[in-house]
Image 1 (cartoon, rainbow, N blue to C red):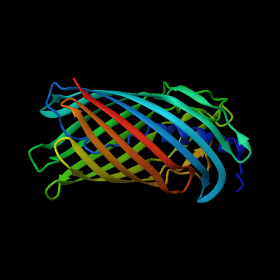
Image 2 (image 1 turned 90 degrees about the vertical axis):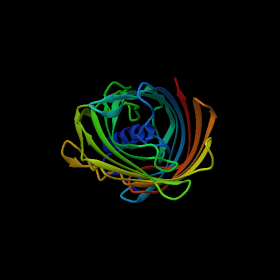
Image 3 (image 1 turned 30 degrees about the vertical axis):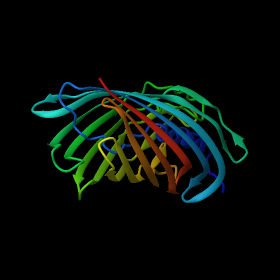
Length: 293
């Protein structure tokens, strides 16, 4: 597999690694609306091992490893009669041992782009079934404050604003079974320090669909099988198409355990089943600690 433009290749490695590090993925039960006045602290740890780099479905020999932490602070309140959750998300971590073909790229560590957001519940019916019935929308705004060096191929920050609108629907099915559906549309600002450091990266709107089939074993334990698909997001550098997009599919399995009345621990195993462009994550292990205070 040969790449037409070396600068474009290095640029895409940077952007894709950043996106894989802290995308707004969901855990089962994320859209359970807690009482107004509740505060929640969430810590995520994500370990990823990627093997193979794809461009238009063709695979090149490549690898990369990442360890990402995310601190998330959420406050439940009521705004204009709707349950809402003003929040801040702070990602940080490292990406290392990145190689494509015989080219070894730089390591990156530090903070990624912070995110501010708030969910708004249009339907809030916790009494429906085991899972409750919910319909909510969440706008996320990514602030270009993370680590970014235009001379590096791999960065945690993206040097651009991003806007993600997420729709969530949670529906009880039968008994302890529940279904969760999430749909995102992501709009991108331009990165004017891309490629050689003086070029402009533009990206079309991308989309993400996530679903969970959850089963509440009891009041303290839950399992979920999940699927996610990303698509769209074609990119261009100074108006030249890079033949890169966000298309990938991923399978997930998750287990959640309440440790006490205020603390929950989640473990999730993920694997990319198909990738059109970018790195393929053969194995991902995600942990989440959820604490109510």
